[in-house]
Image (cartoon, rainbow, N blue to C red; front, side):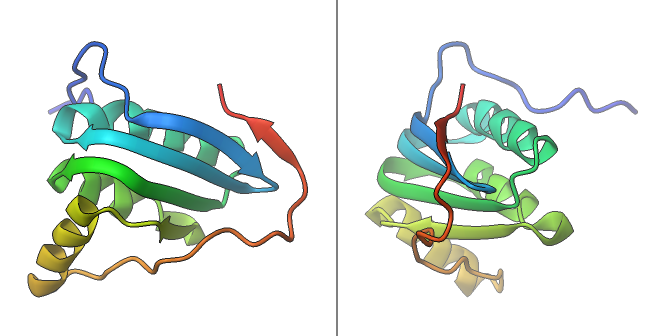
Length: 124
């Protein structure tokens, strides 16, 4: 059986802004992240990983809803030694992480990128 990947809802955008700091990708998320809206987010992350990004900071302050689609994105990024940090967790994100922890899943550490990297460029 061939998996063609996740379904993508037309026009769904959860990325408010995106920059890189050295090899760390910093994304400010917004709105609702579910099965459909997580697909373009994962496509962005896969592209960033293919281009050498090894760190990821997700600012979730403006996320109003998230479900297992977001957990799937979080679970996939740390593979192959990549680092993941969540900054400014919204109530919706914290609620999902609490539920995941109660179910025995590993939680993501809060934090922000270090200022060690000086290179900044926008993601397209």
